[in-house]
Length: 176
Image (cartoon, rainbow, N blue to C red; front, side, top):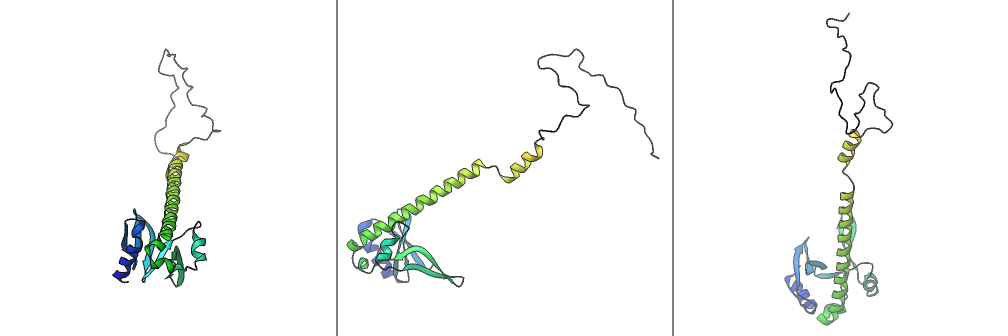
């Protein structure tokens, strides 16, 4: 990929704002305010698309960005910039705006999904906590053993704190 083409792309996006490019995966990502809205690969410019602006790219006969992955063709949500838009910054400006709007929408969806997932993780106890709670919980239908002491009435002191029990005889020695 030529550095001249990257410089040309930066000039095309000049009226749109302070745009930067970073190397990534054999190409460049094009960013505005930290959000990637375009890709430069093999001296071609691809702009971000989503369900809201995809029809614009399809009507302009723009091809979708694709690459080989594990012997198959994978595609991303980026379409090649229209030929006429590559001629001047003024013609590129509406395409840059629609691509950036798609990037904003995609980013907003990701943030909502992350918040929902984080909220779900907080509301749901971890599996080990569920198992611990299940082990310590007593079944509701289990009755107290017959020989268990009766609970003391609340607020009353008993005269003799020691309860009288009969001593059990313990046999010591070998069993036969």
